[in-house]
Length: 77
Picture 1 (cartoon, rainbow, N blue to C red):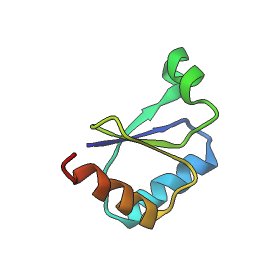
Picture 2: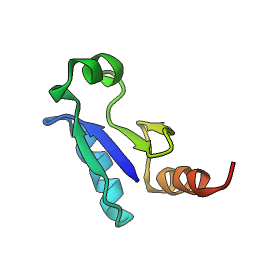
Picture 3: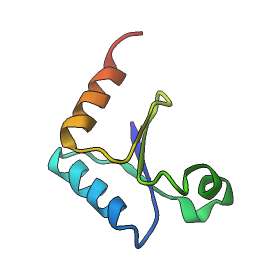
Picture 4: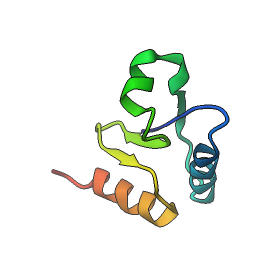
């Protein structure tokens, strides 16, 4: 349902993972360093959350903002 785009050694990415843990959420972790295209697209934005709907939440975010963002994704368009 959600993916966290990150890279190793990124302290902001570690903070984002901690916020997800606070909410008890599991996200698919995608390391952007595995793809030159992802580095080009997201290198300056990580950590980034993406929903399966395509919606994106860029850092900075906290647990409350994640919950609000997710609630918007579950509402019918």
